[in-house]
Amino acid sequence: MELKRGEKMTMRNKYRKPTTFHCNAGSRCSPSVVVWSLVGFLVSLHLYSLVSHNGGKVGDVQFHTSHHTLFRELEEVEEENIQIPPPKGKRSPRAAKRRPKRLTTLIDEFLDENSQLRHVFFPDMKTAIDPMNDSGNDSFNYYPGRIWLDTEGNPIQAHGGGILYDESSRTYYWYGEYKDGPTYHAHKKGAARVDIIGVGCYSSKDLWAWKNEGIVLEAEEANETFDLHKSNVLERPKVIYNEKTGKYVMWMHIDDANYTKAAVGIAISDYPTGPFNYLHSKQPHGFDSRDMTIFKDDDGVAYIIYSSEDNSELHIGPLTEDYLDVTHVVRRILIGQHREAPALFKYQGTYYMITSGCTGWAPNEALAHAAESIMGPWETMGNPCVGGNKMFRQTTFFAQGTYVFPLTGLPGSFIFIADRWNPADLRDSRYVWLPLIVGGPADRPLDYDFGFPVWSRVSIYWHRKWRLPSGRRGLK
Image 1: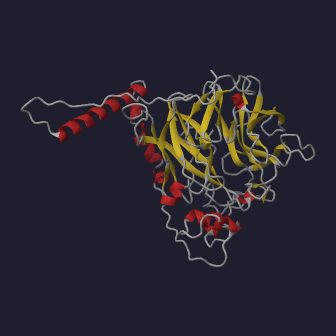
Image 2 (image 1 turned 90 degrees about the vertical axis):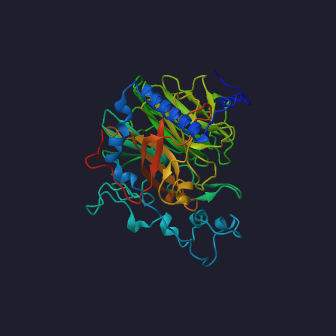
Image 3 (image 1 turned 180 degrees about the vertical axis):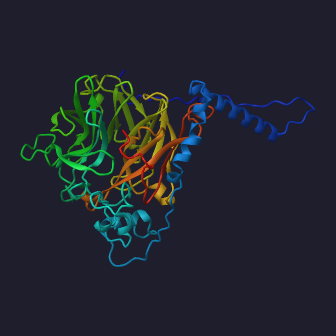
């Protein structure tokens, strides 16, 4: 069914009666005994629910112990101790706008292109990841925040993107915004932007060395009324394959320079490397749509998830069988929580999602969410970031998520893919790829019921340098 504006959904039981414990007259009722009895009951109930959730297979409940030994080196996170230097010279207007009279924070330093810490957040070309000129020991290592070169020696341009594994060619394809143009402001109060150039595509056999396949969906230079005219906005392209039609389908956020169009665009191609034929744009379900993603479930049904109602909530709904339109079914989730940049994934029948707050190009705290049904209800699990320092965790390691990619053959293991935006020079925005592991108990109770959820904790581990476990290159 299609929800109307203003309609609210809630799963909280506002009329729950308080639980009381009665003691017989003349007897002593120790509070600690009562508390520990209740804790024991809850633990037993939680273990029972875990076994039931896994079809009664106790081995599934114990899976994470052996799984974590394989990834122990990835879970031994690195800490950061960055000292803010004293002011030196004139600070940029961008940093000055953030209340310069208060104490300078790491976020201020991050946003200041003249900061003495610039090299910490945006290392120069000397430290670039170069798969064609590695020094042996650096092969297959990921360095979050460094420049990442393609096989031709040029910085990869695939921002806000996602990964598609193509079964027929046994190849990974990385699609994203091609931002290799000058950064400017459309008007005085406008956000930093780059004219649309198109959607870039890169191919790889190992998720590390990427070949530039060119721009698979190009901007329009002349027709100013066309959605893809260079003066407009194209963000967060995602591609999935439709087995029934044999088409590769791309969805993306389409907008004007003032972000008032708030629509999605759809394009199709016969090949993963394009060219993609742009079909049209629309506001899904009649609602405004900005940051978005698409997710293809195990049964082949695809879903769109998008920020709506001025980014105050997310909407989710299935696509048609050909993946070219939405159906009439939609559900409003995370109402009033102001989340964007959704990245959805699935593990052992549970749906998970990473979102960010709404702070423009500035980094903010990620949150993990989970649901037993993709249509909800969705529950917030908390900040998934582990390591670095408090500021690193509160800023998602100075990045914003865009996609979560499963590692086949490594159950419960994923790559969290994020962008470290550089609003002073958007073409120089960096990629932050980090290990994401689903395992261990969730650390907050359900919002809508008494007890703890059956799903596991989501953890994104910070590393300055990391690689996939030995022998896991080219996982498919």
